[in-house]
Image 1 (cartoon, protein in one colour):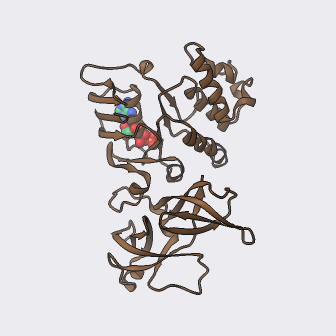
Image 2: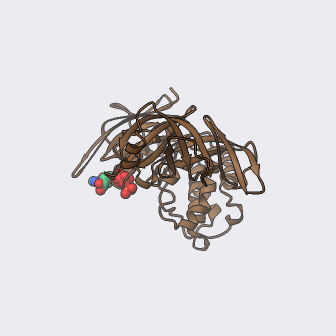
Amino acid sequence: MDDIAARFKLDWPGFRLDVDLTLPGRGVTALFGHSGSGKTTLLRCIAGLERSRQGFLSFKGEVWQDAQTWLPTYRRPLGYVFQEASLFPHLTVLGNLRYGQKRIAADQRRSLDQAVELLGIGPLLERKPDRLSGGERQRVGIARALAVSPRVLLMDEPLAALDLKRKQEILPYLERLHDTLDIPVLYVSHSPDEVARLADHLVAMEGGRVLASGPLGETLARLDLPIRLGEDAGVVLDATVAERDEQWHLARVDFPGGSLWSRDQGQPIGRHVRVRVLARDVSLAARHQEHTSILNLLPGQVDAMADDEHPGLTLVRVRVGDSVLLARLTKRSAAALCVTSGQSLWVQIKSVALME
Ligand SMILES: Nc1ncnc2c1ncn2[C@@H]1O[C@H](COP(=O)(O)OP(=O)(O)OP(=O)(O)O)[C@@H](O)[C@H]1O
């Protein structure tokens, strides 16, 4: 009842959308896939900007579309963030934020203040859009979408138009949204890094169809997804900062399965973090290695294996306690180790990335 149920079919020359999805009514759901896979089209169907025949959409028990019902976009309580915020050039930031509000009711006033605070745009309110950087403009675009007290936030590649530096600037604000908002966010992206940082639930799309939909950790660890992430294949673990080694500038994080050392990035002890472990940074060994520069050695058990994209490579899924990791090995190394399902071995992790 708290979910979002969406069934859409569209037939366009050269493209067909055919999805049947149930999405969680909270947290961030990433709609992920290559260019042209249909992510934006799905988002537009949810927003009521495309109308699919025999479509069905219910939001937390309320029907927005079925055979009898069609709520036009303006009657759907949603905020929409586009790749580039198109702000009115003649209005100040505050004017732009207020423009979308039908009336400044008390709860909308509160939403506007909260959105300004969340996106850190207080100092920009009196500026005109031509005096904003691309990142600031996008933060205003997000605040504008939140200012109407939406019950769901739809974001279509909000970082796509920004360069790397601006992306890095804006990501902490998106992480804040993730931690603070109690409305669901549907977030279109083709960036594995953004997905790893922000998503709780992952929908992988290809050719207008859903290849997989599930909790982020589980879905990333699947070996059977035809859509492969190449160099970005890997998993995300939920962990807690447990110890700091001041001398060597390292931090220890604990996850369900063991501990990992990483470069200290200043997060306080006790802070909940995500840890991204890329398959290319994980290797396997039959015996415990004493003389190695690798800090992280954990006992694991092979769970499953699958061919990687390159014919010389294989992906191995390894259980480490209650967690799973992916390791990318050459087939030659896998053969030399006689890697088989159920085998116990040592997992060596060269580097991990801590994300808030
Ligand atoms: N109005 C339309 N009429 C016909 N075809 C369309 C229309 N809009 C989009 N398409 C086609 O539908 C397909 C899916 O487009 P969509 O924008 O949903 O993909 P996407 O996964 O969001 O891609 P990107 O990451 O590049 O934005 C593409 O082949 C596109 O050319």
